[in-house]
Image 1 (cartoon, rainbow, N blue to C red):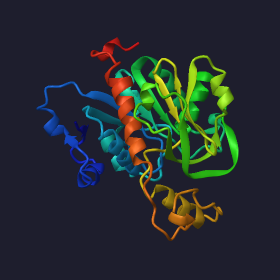
Image 2: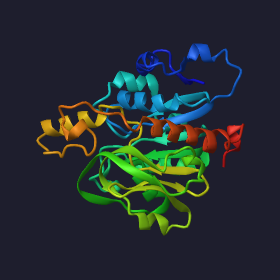
Image 3: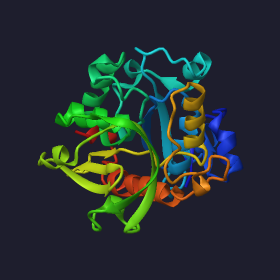
Length: 305
């Protein structure tokens, strides 16, 4: 089944060329079905790129999803045209009376700042608090995961000595958890961050559980035991070239970045990039949509509480 998007969303043409099943607004009007209502809070600088990445993994589900986009009104986005935001995005005041089956909160390149120093932190806190009664299940990504763990559970983040960037190997801790159904015992996923959460801080909270870890990258997936919140420290949605683009950007800024770990063939930036995480990414999002959104959310969204 498809994801439903605006007729002229730029991501549409990229996804259609990749044979990802998308449905435009006009076609969706003829469908006698209630699609899942998904809200994407996009905190990444290049919002069009992130839209495409998230829509790509959502599009592999057999469930029809209606995706809306949200951005922070208290932040001036410098890397996405204002016309794009005005046409395709809402701000919180425009949607806060609504309810959603699911929500995705992306990462943001602000990990070196204390949460309270991020310019949109007060607005983000309002959104995070709002999700508890207006969204059935929320998936937090990277810094979005750290922000959610901090706001909801008081779990602190800690600064890494250097940026963690690359493709890391992870293991499944609970083979019976629905989010991990179909996962290999060992799988790979991208990370790109300057901070982390300590496993013991998460496990010491009786409402949380750690589902997957990496020897090198630390906690990867953690969750609220009731299935209403998930926290993913990596970027399984990343494209083949995303880490390469970040690496070259940091080189151009004279940040002296390390070559992303286990990413380029033979560790050589001049060599091809094997895509080793797409299957895991598709399964992660499909399981979340199926087991914690579609099968759990009330048919009448007004009943979410």
